[in-house]
Image 1: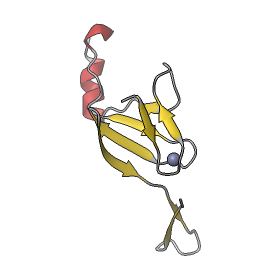
Image 2 (image 1 turned 30 degrees about the vertical axis):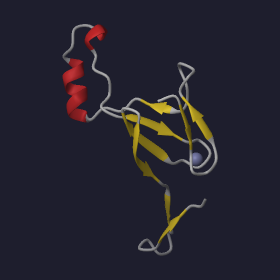
Image 3 (image 1 turned 90 degrees about the vertical axis):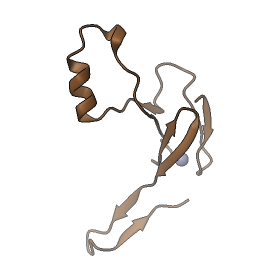
Image 4 (image 1 turned 30 degrees about the horizontal axis):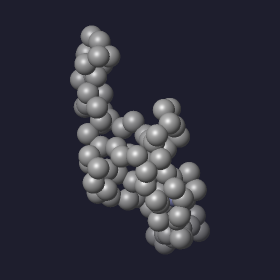
Length: 89
Ligand SMILES: [Zn+2]
């Protein structure tokens, strides 16, 4: 990736390394395999790029350069757990 505009309007970028945008995500199974690797030189790249927007807490998932999913925060009303609220924008 490089740059992405979140739906809330926040500009996201992973140009600086390290950064607070890109999350390094592996499944537990993948992590077990990684723990068996002798050298970090052979560490596989994560299957997906996962970016977090600090402004709205959305999480964006990319496969290669293709944006494939966005996860949006829902708040649970503690007085009525069955009723969830979606944050806007
Ligand atoms: Zn956002």
